[in-house]
Length: 140
Ligand code: CMP
Image 1 (tube, rainbow, N blue to C red):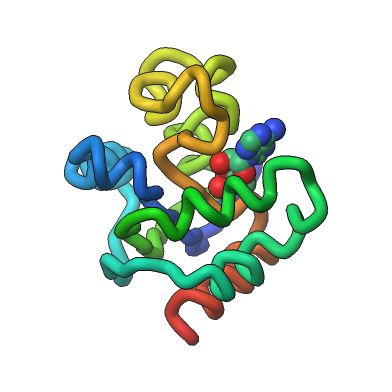
Image 2 (cartoon, rainbow, N blue to C red; image 1 turned 180 degrees about the horizontal axis):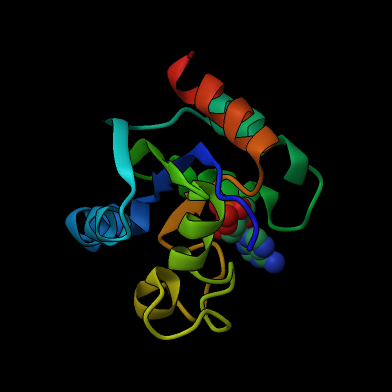
């Protein structure tokens, strides 16, 4: 058995998740999995912030629509902590494309099956991304 690591990850409940009143449901799923909330805030992101946050996607066909969507309404940003937190959160969220996300995952249950970007949540995809994203969002 591989050793489990206590680590942190960053999650954003996107404008569609807030609009659909899913804040409590999303947080409940993470906490039920044993993860601990470290810090959380609700905010409206600026275009400049989103462009740097998603810099790795700059130039892709969906980049401008993604940035427009992420600034279209309030989001909830949180840091979660726990053993194998990054992979645990990604499993709870499901695949990026809500069509491919399994039943019982956040995106499978609540994502928009016709518009990929409207997938309810963002989460860090690696320890390096988590460090970068936590610093960008909470300056720590
Ligand atoms: P997220 O986990 O926040 O990381 C980048 C986001 O870009 C992703 O979730 C989706 O919201 C969006 N995205 C990724 N791939 C596509 C795509 N092919 N078309 C539209 N949006 C996408």
